[in-house]
Image (cartoon, rainbow, N blue to C red; front, side):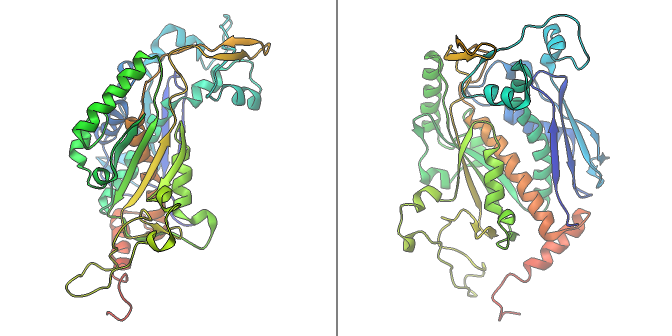
Length: 395
């Protein structure tokens, strides 16, 4: 069986907590609770987030798989506490043991959520079990798992970043996006590389909040230092762009994904949609350099040595701060939807989740290609392969 980087999450939004288990983490990678918690806090930040982020302060608790700050090759289990669960109401509503006291069922169906489809699929007469698991709260566990993947990738020279491209109608130019200042982005409340655009995005969020509405937008994730040969062209389910697309579309509210210049290339003539391969010479020792990166680092389902560039298009949060016409689960009669606290815009936070998802896919592809049970072995295998990535006549 080939090496795999596998992971699962468990937990509900207002249950006792969230858990993630990562299997396939090779031995010898530096991992600490502080490292994971740093990414969890990045996910909770961003202008336009709701009150839940003020209640929860996510801290990672490593239960297994790490010894003295390094992975040991066994499954890594991480737990995140839901502080909101300590509220007596939630302890009853989300109790794991049978209860005798009556509980108010949630029977008003909210458009844009999993409420209707989930209750019909699983046979529930209460929306609560569906909305608790389908909540974006689950993505905190993904970010925890992603932090492990990022640590593995960083150890072999692959780094993953994200930035906000648009919020509502305010958009960052392609030129600025392609010259992102990652340190500046980490300091920005909307995770954008330009201060003028940042202020316009903040104004857009403030206006939506005043209008009792929400905003969507676009986030971009880039992986730098990616070697040739991750993924494969030989089977549909091994194509890396397909695996990345699935990962991004699994993020709450993401309804479209673009790799490289995917949208622009659709309207260009073929002669202008290619990344021309540069000849090798002693003056240009970078092997297989390109004149551009319109393909976003992926050709025929494989990495081609360039940066991987992926954009996620996220719809406005469905939980808008106003009631909307809907229906009752019991009777089918017309009824206004209820409102629970929510964010106004989550594009900056979605970028952090996107980083985690891309890192998780790349970590799996890395182990698939280079194998190994410990970091030293993987690094050695990768170095040996990279020695072969050159014109065939060059020894």
